[in-house]
Length: 357
Image (cartoon, rainbow, N blue to C red; front, top):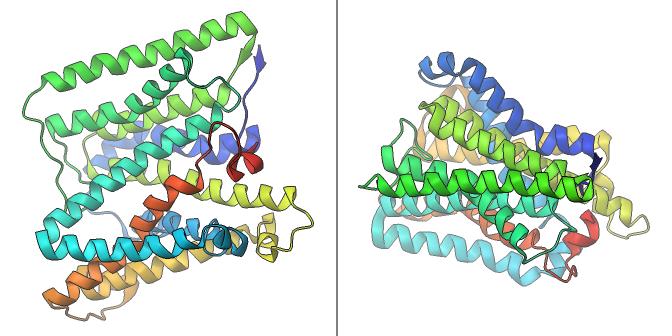
């Protein structure tokens, strides 16, 4: 069998940093999920590792692909200036007109959409070079979407003992038949994908290992987090690690390859993307995350005085109307820009294709 996977960087890197994290964290939850489900609140060290080190940090890692890269910033300056302002002002308008409940519901569903689309984007990167628009392409699309959408439909139908955000509850589907229909499509789409890939191997002798592992890891992670277990910590572990770690790795390797592919570039920022600077990259995004979470704790949540100190500034309703959208603005900006910076058009003219291959 010939493995014909267009790896994002290499088999070792992809298996360790892109596909590996959801596989490893899912395996841990499957092995120890019963014990984890019995835990109450997260230990402080785990909260720091998950929330500061991955969840919030991965949002700020996109700065290294956009605002910190002067060449990239100049290329899309209007977009990068306008999006944060629109996200903040739009957030203020929603918060003021409809209140915090509607605001947090909107943020949560935007986050869910972003998580679903990230897995779709990764699968599309792994199927580079394969035909677009044919039946095989549609099967790939449906399979990766159902790997994430079906667990979400299950959650909305039966309810679970966890939340995406503390201020958010999913809408309940009042009937079970949509879940039954979705389950059938889910099984059919994954089965069709497996049959298609087997037939392709039989016909050509090639096998896209990366694409198949990415789909399997996605289905396993989302199914385990939402359906198999019904606890906040098990959901949080898989949800954060499976999404955040691959994204931070993708940012770094993209800029690393950009530096390698442009050795004579005048963009000095790209010199940062060397193995010896990886710890600085991790510490930098964690520093941004610490500052943001500190602001949340000082002005709003007051949940981790042992991490951020007992300092607290009471905020009026008017201040919250401005401050809450401001603090969520980096997150929303990250969601919006993510739809642009990884887009690869069919003609292959986008810079993403030029760098990744």
